[in-house]
Length: 93
Image (tube, rainbow, N blue to C red):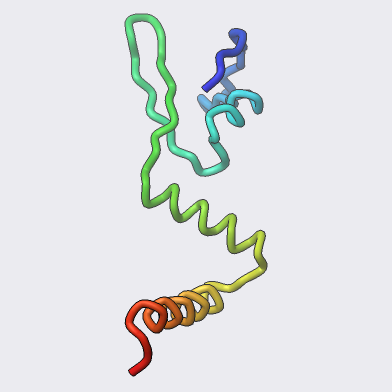
């Protein structure tokens, strides 16, 4: 991640803190992302927590939305591709 100048943000009444857009983009954080908050002395270290399965789910959701495919269509396409690869590798039987 590239370095940036220090930014300030205000903690809202309910304890909510908005992470500035530029920092979210640099960290690949989006709505629903989970972060770890580690107290270090009188400071806090906030880092994106990468949960591999959740991250994969988010990426698949984005790809499906962008491609306008349903999950059923994706699965059917995977089955067809798997059969093609099997035939290419082992021949037909």
